[in-house]
Amino acid sequence: AQRVTQPEKLLSVFKGAPVELKCNYSYSGSPELFWYVQYSRQRLQLLLRHISRESIKGFTADLNKGETSFHLKKPFAQEEDSAMYYCAPSRRTSNTGKLIFGQGTTLQVKP
Amino acid sequence: KAGVTQTPRYLIKTRGQQVTLSCSPISGHRSVSWYQQTPGQGLQFLFEYFSETQRNKGNFPGRFSGRQFSNSRSEMNVSTLELGDSALYLCASRSSPGTGQAGELFFGEGSRLTVL
Image 1 (cartoon, rainbow over the protein chains, first blue to last red):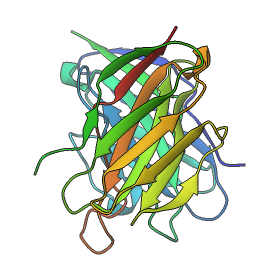
Image 2 (tube, chains in turn brown, orange):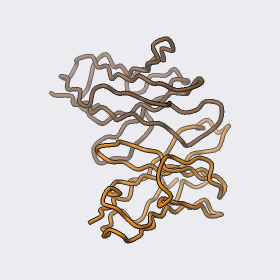
Image 3 (cartoon, helix red, strand yellow):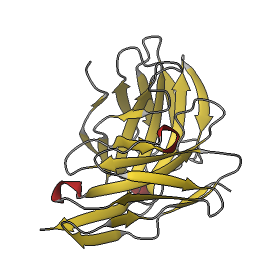
Image 4 (cartoon, rainbow over the protein chains, first blue to last red):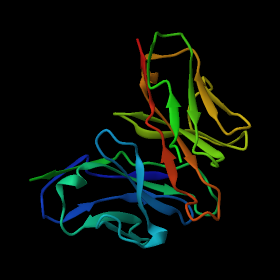
């Protein structure tokens, strides 16, 4: 079964502290992994995807196929990072608008 | 380009009624997906349409249906509303392969449905 687990509903850190939002997945085949973010009163939007291997707003995410994890990391959290973060795998072999979203983790960065 | 537009933004219905929600994708996007967002279940995939054809369907009862028009605009319909259908319904559009943004979903602001 396709499943995504984000074990933390809420992650609260102080500004400048490192952040790691965990994501574990169970997905047949080799999925493409995404992190989506929803800032307060804004639309859900793509933050980054594993295939791009890029850093967006200081965030990176490494796909660990052995552990089936795709944790999102940032070395120094900023207050503007406070938002809801969703991990989502998608079938890689074809373009699809079907994503399996995790329950989401609310990141709260305190001043 | 204008973003994904959903109407209405808010609506209140009573049990047993039906509702139709509308979504206009980003110009040039031919794929439209629908998601239901609730505090308890999170984001759940409803269905996806591409070129007026349903490509994928989630695990929702047949009361949930959708369609897509030739201009890529999409509607979803929920019949015989139940209290548990209260949710934020999100629409997302996606560009075609080879454009550099393939796979990225662009979401609307959602239609918040309250069933009394």
